[in-house]
Amino acid sequence: MEEREIAARLAELDGWQLSPDGKAIARRFEFKGFAKAVEMANLAAWLGNKRNHHPDVRFGWGYCEVAFTTHDAGGLTEADFVSAARLNELVA
Image 1: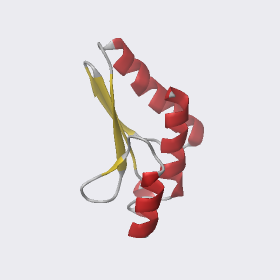
Image 2: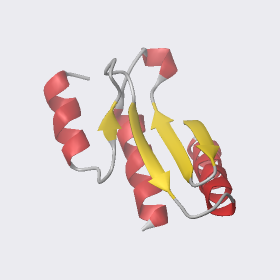
Image 3: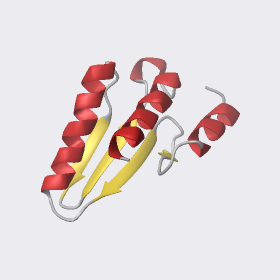
Image 4: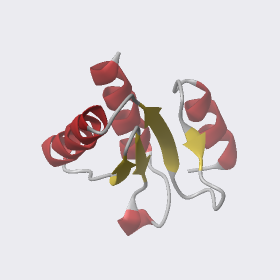
């Protein structure tokens, strides 16, 4: 994807940021406690399995970080932005 298109798509996604290398989009979700962070990690994993587009997920006490990239393409594709938008819808 072109930089302009990435910037435009990212502007439509609440809470998501471009990674420093420009190859992924990520969002940090914050919670009180560990259980909600685990639930968020499981939700992101479930969505990845359902869409066959798997995110990188990190979590710990009070947070869950989700990142989408298309490894085969070596960067961002439409699938990353669609998956991020769908995850936003699920947690809204």
